[in-house]
Image 1 (cartoon, rainbow, N blue to C red):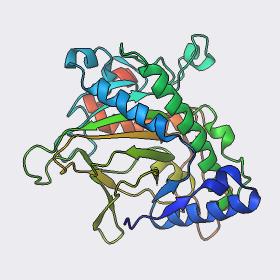
Image 2 (spheres, rainbow, N blue to C red; image 1 turned 180 degrees about the vertical axis):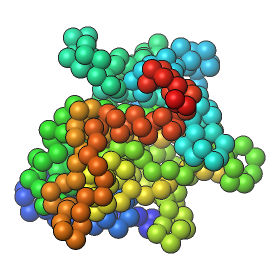
Image 3 (cartoon, rainbow, N blue to C red; image 1 turned 45 degrees about the vertical axis):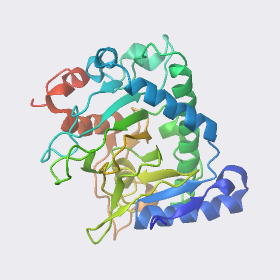
Image 4 (cartoon, rainbow, N blue to C red; image 1 turned 90 degrees about the horizontal axis):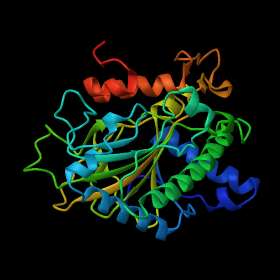
Length: 326
């Protein structure tokens, strides 16, 4: 059994105000105390998850040439393929032993933000795989709607109007990230991880994982616990942006991946960030004379860019128009 709480969110999705408040209270407690929780009865069909994982396995099984044709480093908008050891979540360690593929919101050719060059508003790079686009976009849409519901719970728990966050997240610079972790090379000595210890950047992460395991969450005493795979659930965690927004009322917790299972591991992370132009400023219910704001207001796109620059260093040139060393 996991030491991370499991929360049945059916009353949030289908119940009235009383059910919403009950679920919001559970989510708020987990967000304050651990920064991690599972959600059950979340409404995302098991069949859609299975189709997504099949699509991911097909994509990552392609030759390198096919994957590089949709390289992340060809896009200025955080979209496309990142090869094994292509990113470094902890610069004191070796690059991560994983590969990934990023998908953002699908934008029409006449989208106002696309035409205006708004940061992180670009075209997705699609591989030539039948059904891949439809499956991944269907899952993206399901995660976006679920993320909006969870933000409703955050608002209720924090003493805000239930729809408080909606104007800040209705055009999110969210990312669906398909992930593939080969079995860890050799014995684990702490110098290289599948995903190095880190906190997530945005508001909320919704993670679907297979049954191989490997996700570990840091405890307050410095130890690590397994976020064990649990059928029918998604793992949720608070990101740095929401911690900042809530004036550290909610906590963003370090986590890591070590694939010791001897089999390849797949997961799908949905990173729910704010709108590009959202002003992330201390929430009115999270400040007082005794607890003044701890962070300066920041634009959502600027905040995400600042975090990605640390991860990709020189390779981030295509995302910023300048090298990470400048």
